[in-house]
Length: 150
Image (cartoon, rainbow, N blue to C red; front, top):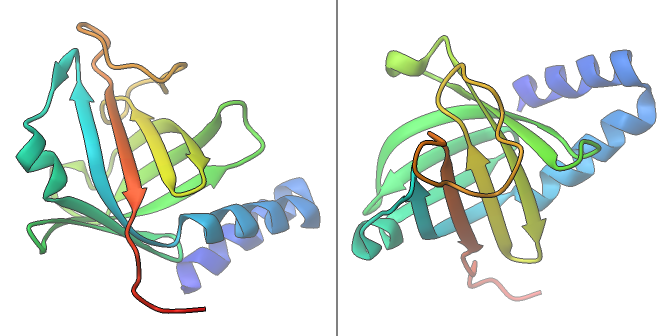
C-alpha cells in the first residue's frame, strides 16, 4: 500500500490534488478479484478453458495473476483515468519483464473490465482490438462475487 501512496503523492505533485483524488477513486473501482472471460492475442482467440482459469486480484496498486488458483505473475499498475481512452501501465515485479513497461488502455463498465495492452516496452494501443499483426492483447474480465453481503 505504501507504493500506492507514493504513486498518488507523485501524481498530486505533478497534477494537483484533484488529480490524485481522481486516481485514488478510479483505482478503488479496480479492487477485487476479476475472472478472465475472453483473451485475444494478435488475431487469435485463446482456449476458453484456459481463459476461464485465469484471475487477476487487485489490492491497492498491486495485481496478482493466477491460473487455477496458482500465482504466476505479480505487478504494479499505474492508471490515468483522465486520458481518453483511460490508460494503464503494468510494471512486472520480477521475471524477464521486470525492467519493462506494458502499456495499455482500459474501460471499466460496472463489473466488466476490458484491457488492451501492447508488448513490453512497445507503444500503447490506440483502440480495443487485437488483430493479426497488431501484437496487442485484448482481455475482458468480469468481477467475481465476494460472497459477502452489504
